[in-house]
Image (cartoon, rainbow, N blue to C red; front, side, top):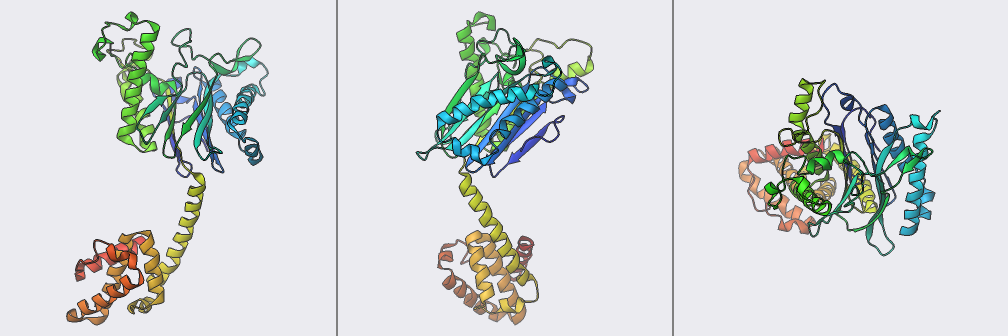
Length: 442
């Protein structure tokens, strides 16, 4: 899956595969950057593997958007054929295949162009989450350009910038360090900072891929802060050497991203928070540009913080897809079973539920007890309600109620420990429970 409407911001989630992505732009309204989104993402689940990629078209406009779109599609298409996965038997084979995939993406960008230089360029970060032969898990990836890759370890709460320093050799701040699409020589890609990644992961861990539009706004410089305001003995950023600059700004980025992860917890909320941070931080600058459309963008970050850009955050939660598929199939079966028995309950067979030994009722009872004790409780209330209506004698209610519950707990012994089993049920309570039960069944 991936974006279907490339010109607009969007949020996409594939819960079964554990992949979510949020993508948008923070440019002033009416500008080209606001009307054409040049970030693209795609993902695909095949067997027990998840393939995902994020591309950030360099510069802006239709050519950049097309380059990112073509590259992201070509990347995922490389993995679509099931026979390919049978050939990827070890990490070395995956690494080699990923390197070949970069070339395929580069050719896809150039395809059909009368002149090579009509094609745009894009950065790329993508890879595959896969189970290993030893039973463990790993993310095996590749990147060209300045998209960043992070790994959050669920068990320890540790966050690692896997792509740390991927833009360290860039000539200037506008240099993304590398890209695919015709850029150098006779239309070759710029692979200066091409990197391979192997990240051991565990189920529940998070792999996070973000474009520079996200992490540039997790940078103290763009946040309008100074080294001294962060507790360092330096007045301005120009007073730090290259190594110190990377360490100080890298730590700030790490701590802010970790804060979003630990506070939001769920993948979609994390991705949304990261992108929303860029929108909020750039709000003053964007408003000023909308009021002064013919003026250059202000560069005083203390007064006008944030860096406007297209921004994308993808979060992949490592999970066993085989278990997910099996659980999903079982859920479908359970829904059909509930629907069938529920129709009996709502239909003309209510008399069958008036007897404590009703097989239809006990079957439904046992089924709901494994699904949810709350549903089971509602059903017990409804059963009592039917008995109460039939008897019309309050004195007999408790006697029959006790008989019913005795039948329930004899039939399903595991339910004897439920905390509500000794609670007395009033007529109003069972009526309310009946309403809730019928809502649930509907």
